[in-house]
Image (cartoon, rainbow, N blue to C red; front, top):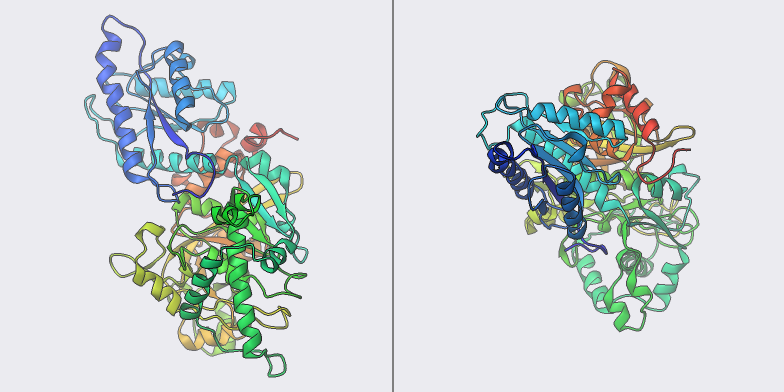
Length: 595
């Protein structure tokens, strides 16, 4: 069940038709409505929300042959909570008379590729109308000609329908929700300087700010569920095994102090959950205001430095929230950013909404060339890693799902939506994670860092939103894989940084040109110190989502044939990425105003 306030968005299917009666419209009614039903069936049987609910489609009560039918459909969609518009037709229709004109609802048109009636002609006319009116729409048209009575959806059409709907539903789910900033700027990281206008104008998301001292107030005054705390602490002691203390003997803390730190980081986790989405138990305790939360679809914790110089770090809190399980069992992962890097949280949210899986938060820390690896280890990199690797590592706060101990039906390492995760998947994730005491040089206040090594070979996509003065937001995308290194190579490389943190060895797919000339160039062109990493190769989905939000993509390694943007983008020049920039600049942010 969704933990956010507000109903889940629905997908509206609009079967448009030639409005001429006395034979024309009547001959097309069944075929037109069957297209709508087939599209709805595809969507409802394939897609789910990250909270587990199935996506629901709403079909217009009648086919749409003119403006009156279009208005009746729009009224129904408004009442039903439709936030995504898919028009389908096998025939000619009356262009602008039957179109959907809501500027805030992402829209696509599927024109049937058949010779009996000119569905493609209407598709072209409709897309021209949308472009002329400044309402970008995605055009869907199959490569192969189908017979008039064929009710199947070709693979290339279904791929585009699902790609569009996934992106459009992501847009709809963000609208009206919050980003919860606990604290503010961390160590001068630009991404943690939360830009409220960007959140509102591009995502429809409001920014909510809570000072870190609120955690101390709630700890001191016991403003958290006492029963859940006992359950959480017992689960933590049983499942979160403390790792070796790598601090100097002089810096190591006593068992009694560590016990108090464990208690505090568990309380911090409960409190951060409550701050994000509320807790009715708090109202029973007399804390009505605190019980309501901030309706946060994502959040971040400043942590370093002021908090971590004084209190235990939030590595445990961030890791557990970002995972698909805790003491209450298997559940939807939260999106919760280390160092309050809001831009990385947004990037993680994109991946989560598109895949329904937990997301990695990592430093894009080091490029290791084959020559450097051989110099320090005496060994050569092989396989996928032979041309170099990128070390993804952060201070112990990425999702435990990233251990890659969850297994698919063939026994391969994977990361699953929570409803597909089994109890033994969870236990393997926990068993392959240790929690060493935090490095005192970094974290004077103590705490515990998650420590694990991601298994390979998993398909991964790393992305990141960056803000560029004079341009606005841009998105970069790198598809690749996790890789496993021989233990003797891993140990040498890992011990050169902080070995108490979780490591993912990542190899992006290179193309021999541009930003993906080689692995080194990917690292050199990455726009920030952090990256958000999702299971699967989802670069094409991210590109479509970015276009809906008017965010240009400045770097990606997705095949050109898989790039799917609104049809109007073709009018902004031939080179795809330059056209993307010009189109996004022309239309401006989805919810805001052009500067």
